[in-house]
Image (cartoon, rainbow, N blue to C red; front, side, top):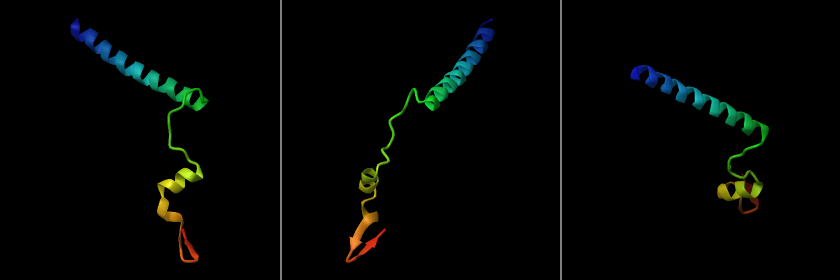
Length: 62
């Protein structure tokens, strides 16, 4: 009896995890939820890679 209940509980956890993942993916794709991400502005890219756009004499190294 306990083995049967335990097996059903494991399947319930497995199914609810898949269901919650699917709902979260749908909400994310619909734009209703968002996660913090790295800003992709030019200033942020320049501060991350400072040495990519520096000048050496009159020649710009990129």
